[in-house]
Length: 430
Image 1 (tube, one colour):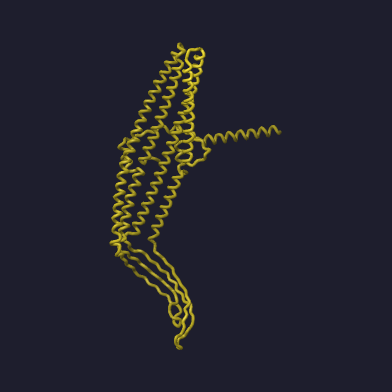
Image 2: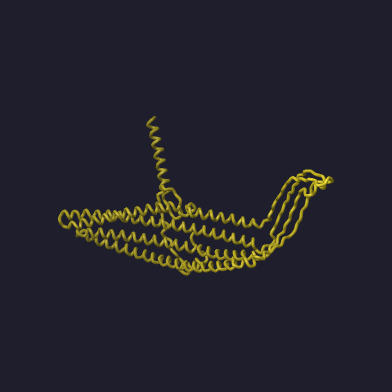
């Protein structure tokens, strides 16, 4: 019976460990879709999201400024009278007043409406900045994931090279023991292996650093070991020409959109500044109850009134002039900033597009190099059966074949990074 319980417990633990290991493997795998899902955990995105929520509340606050002002006031006091003549009565009396006052702005020269429009524009800018930050974090996550993938491939290439060089070192060592080669040849082969081992450590450190940066970027736990799953994320290709990309970017780039809305905001602010020079018309009403009359008359009194208030600040004609000119200059400054952003965008777009085309050429060259290295290796292997001295050449050809394969991976990774960078800068990025 005891053996049966132990067997059942062992089976349960085995199934549990298998389930946990499967979950860990699934948790460690990461693709571009996983980056998209984790973007909202980024600190910069959280901060921008809070800023946007603040601007949303500020819009609500600016709209509430159009509502009527309502003021309730009241006072109470003890009235005391001392007679100066014998025919005047003396005494003490409590008095009170309660008043309800309301005021509504009928016309203010567009002050409130322009303030609301300006706050709405601020909210739109913050929403666009939030979208821009999300896209930048997405792009940065993609780039880090591709860099990890490339370094993992480079590490595999180095490890395979080390194995080939160790095989070469053993053969050279046999030649050295038989007096066929010099000791310098043996040491040179060993030094090459040492250099490869040093590169392996450097690449592994790069993988660890990039993984840590990606975890920090996406706000995941430190125990999360990134294993890029990019089998379906290495085949994206641009179908648009440079002119088509630039035309789309002029309409949809988040950077230009922010600049455009900035110009609109400054124009609205100028109208808001000029509204101070216009008259203000208000509707008011008040209603009160109290005991304002002498004590020998009525104890209480109820009164109310409704009317209009018209005011015009004459000093604004000369006090607000410089402020209006300064705001006009800010509009010109914003327009110049927009033009500069368009120029910078075109330059960045052209550089990325050129590098993307270059990466496509590198992919084709790497494929040709793979074919040539495979053919060279086939020829040397056929010759190796008759010439033992060609061992080093065979190993070198295998190294070149692996190098060509890695160069192909590197070119593909570069093309995908440029692809997503172009999509982000143009506003295609999702």
